[in-house]
Amino acid sequence: MATRREILLKISEAIKELYGEVEARQIAEIVVTECGGIGRNELLVEPYKELEIKDIDRIIRELCEWRPVQYVIGRAEFYGLDFEVAEGVLIPRPETEELVEWIALESSSNARILDVGTGSGCIAISLRRCLKNSRVWALDISDKALAIARRNSLKYAPDVEFIEGDALADFSTLVSEKLDVVVSNPPYIPRSDESSMRRNVTDYEPDTAIFVEDSDPLIFYRSIARTARRMLKPQGKLYFEIYELYAGEMRAMLEAEGYTDIVVREDFRGKERMVCATMVS
Image (cartoon, rainbow, N blue to C red; front, side, top):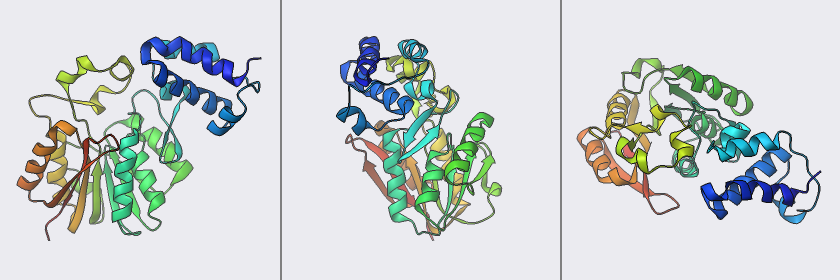
């Protein structure tokens, strides 16, 4: 049986040409801690303790094929929770945690919230847990995404209400109450950027959850903003995760759609990645 350190080095060495040494080690740590059932501190403090990870050869083989580590192990950490993920569902990102934190800090504990394009359910479920008296709806067009989101919800926030619906259609009649918050992390990467992205994204993550055509990169934002106007209470808030290169265009579009008090925020990398707009009274 190998030690924790030996397994860590074996994984890192196998994938460092794909990801570079730093990211390869981070991926290896995820495998060792998640599949080995240990915390990161345990790995650092007792690296020479023996550890058995089932299917380690399969795991390394799939990582070498650019398959994202989250799909390989079947889960992704988000906001302190382990969310089930699989191909067909977007992998939650750290910057989206910042969006959740912003909403949680600005919303009342009994807020009425809709998450449009919920994917794994990470935004909706995290907000429901943060805001103890809230009522949360989560909408997605994908049956597979909704099935995974429901399973995640059963673990962490079983009263989140899931809805099948299209972000590009009028979904305003699918929720029974006026809302305090509408939030979305829709597709926003221009198709022209695909060739510069790594294969762990382009070969495995759902194309329809990532890319938009260059001819209308704000198509999802505009549609959601228009529908949200029929759903939000006066002074209700609309939150988006955005593509940093379109922050100016986002502000102009939201103003044109009748929203006020538009605030753009940077993420932890210093990129303009979040926006909040207020429904006029």
